Length: 329
Ligand SMILES: Cc1cc2nc3c(=O)[nH]c(=O)nc-3n(C[C@H](O)[C@H](O)[C@H](O)COP(=O)(O)OP(=O)(O)OC[C@H]3O[C@@H](n4cnc5c(N)ncnc54)[C@H](O)[C@@H]3O)c2cc1C
Ligand code: FES
Image (cartoon, rainbow, N blue to C red):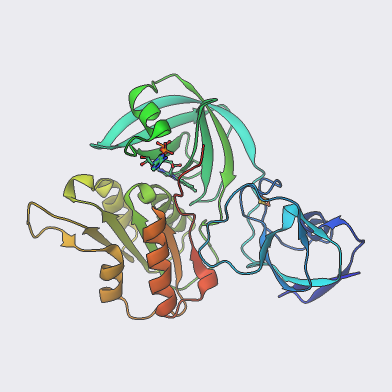
């Protein structure tokens, strides 16, 4: 039985029943992976011809550009087929782990956003833009995005209080400094692509700023000199936060352009651009050919932005998004 791997054009001889990820790794095919259990989405690849059997998919794959994609780690080869692996020069392999961490700070960023810092017992390796599942108690478990880089001493998370939200209410009302948190990750496919040389669009809605800050800091640390266009959308001026950090990034990376857009501005001052984030992007940038986009935040914003970018010529494989879907438990 043959497995053809595009775009490397390699032809592998494989036995029936082989696991796709194990097969690729055994033949030194460059493929990103992390959890090896169908949870993180990093090993996603496209079936171009033939088919594979997926043995389970625990997590929703949140990239808006879905086609005939499978997770290599949970796929079994039962017939000759061809697959396409994504970006063989952008491989990310951070084995997923569960790490104990202690809460070191809980700081108000706005009236309904808290910055939570955790000191991990061991370093956690991840790429900028990824997220982890935080377990505060056995009944309080949710995914949150890392706002910093893995070289930082502490992990930083930005948590918005969801109306009647079970876990965010726990974080706001009960979590305290010194509490233990289990951090499981890294997860997610919306991580910084460091080999790219064209313009980057970074779109953050609300606490979507956390992964976007990590991506911009990561790009600067990796000495990428790409133009970066960052759009930060907030509901109103009182929901804006992180400006000092953004301005300090701009000071060290002049090709970073920033636009803050608020949906409503009852104070009617002229300091803030008012409207939808997608309207602002559509007004400012006509075409996205050759761009890469990182879009983080609530699902409707992520989906509207991805649709606009596709209409304006972006390669849909180059829109990276792990939307903040609500959990079902
Ligand atoms: C990949 C990923 C990354 C994320 N990163 C972040 C991050 O960095 N920062 C961040 O703040 N959040 C992030 N989130 C969202 C986060 O995981 C939680 O979903 C969020 O904090 C809300 O959790 P909760 O338990 O407080 O709310 P839940 O109790 O899960 O409720 C969520 C919302 O649904 C509503 N709701 C609940 N039950 C019902 C019902 N039966 N009918 C109608 N409405 C209902 C609630 O009112 C609430 O507004 C991320 C999510 C994902 C998937
Ligand atoms: S490595 Fe396959 S989904 Fe995580």
